[in-house]
Length: 191
Image (tube, rainbow, N blue to C red):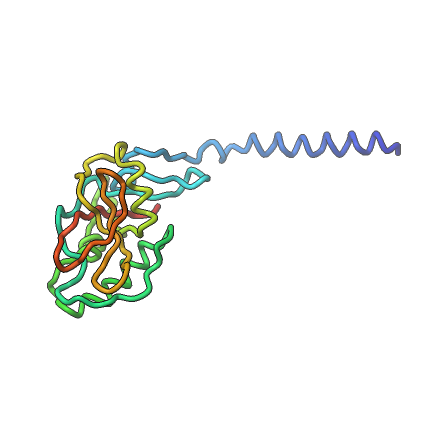
């Protein structure tokens, strides 16, 4: 066989594989989500590149001014500020703070206990966003809607008795003294 014929055959074969892959009938049946979509008990505010997964915010604030700690001021410990950390941070915060007052309500607990039922499906895997997740929510605040211009809690401590918050009026991150102030809470969940 001549090299040109082999090259032509290889190019033709690879091209046909690409065409077959683009005609995959299952590919067009997979729904793509979008920012602002009412889905999964809330409003989508972040989408991964695949269009199938991302983050959802509750449709309203869960509380306009609730404390972060549960009666006692204590250092919770190492909490990750990054993307995807809110869920594990929330569980860690609750495990650390709940023994202080079994009946007490605080920012992480109010998120973890939140649930929404839509079309017979219960969505109850909500959490307090990490600092990075809260900033992503701030960036889509006009699309998600319903925010005050107050500070919103993140699931991240700065140091003892100091928690990262974000002002939804100007986007500023700052430190809030958790004993003295109640801040707003908006729960999120992943899908």
